[in-house]
Length: 448
Image (cartoon, rainbow, N blue to C red; front, side):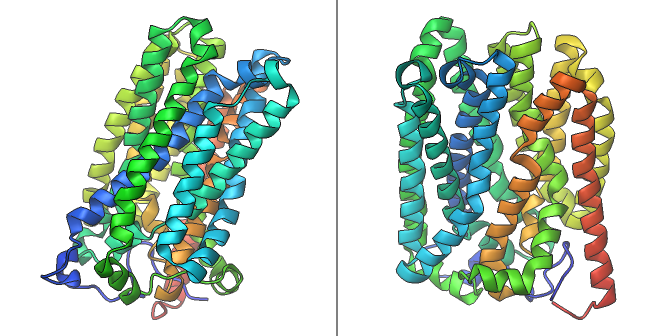
């Protein structure tokens, strides 16, 4: 078992220059193109992700679970929401097999086609009133398909950026891939805010909510061609081969790097736990228990997402100055402190709820901006490609998959203090994982 510092890349010598130098002067794949490919690709995925999440809080309880009261229907919708995260590791395993057998282009094209198709099918899905329980079964099926597709959409671009960055710019390059999250939320939230404010409640629940899912399909088509252009480039393939960014067997990876997968997943848990607590859960809480306008609250969240994007950029600078490990640790402590104020803010009327959102998004940007670094630097070169994908899958599953369900269920029945407990547990897991990683590094600093 080999373990390296979360703040360094001991298993890979520093390239001593920027990505352009590693590609070569006559290359057609430049750092800017890779960065754009990363942001476009991740933004399209997150857009799909947030369209479904927002619909789970605002639409699906009425459309697919009308037989239950509003709270119970929302909890049912959040249970279906979690299915994608359960399916995601299986999608990663399947996609790695496809890549080994048929190549990178086939893997990415099939994953994004499945993602776009399943998302579009949800747009056309009849509700419970039309086809009864079959509507729930089909919704669950397409949600699982989305999870499999998201697992297969890993293209290695974030790892490639991080590994080819100069020693003092790794935090910056690790941050780029994460920018897709606030971009995706801003677009998805903006669409829903416009539809909710412009349509009657009847029109919105009848047909308006379907429009963002149509848009998601169109965005996926654009993202597919943008990413395939890079994946199909000879220079891109050469870079991946030089860095040994190729798929490995899941069983082999688990046997050799199981501890690194756990450390990487739990080291990012504070930010993953916070992710849905400031994006999806508050929408359900506002719609159920607050007099705030949903469209106005979405605008506040959009502003928060913009602040998160700025915070992500800042996280790259901070991590390059003090190190990723210390950045993640300090942000875990900040999230733990923030958790103590969560009940007061969420129960503090519009001002308190808006403050919770804006502060939470800033903390999310600072912490999530460096979360990808934890899944890159722990693995030897041979296992980094698959290890990065699978560790992210585990982090999403453990930290974020059930966050809206658990937070809403516990807070509705036992009080908002359980939101604090959830966030605090994520922060504690991050600090524990960072401590374990540091102890292993100190025990054998010469290992990769």
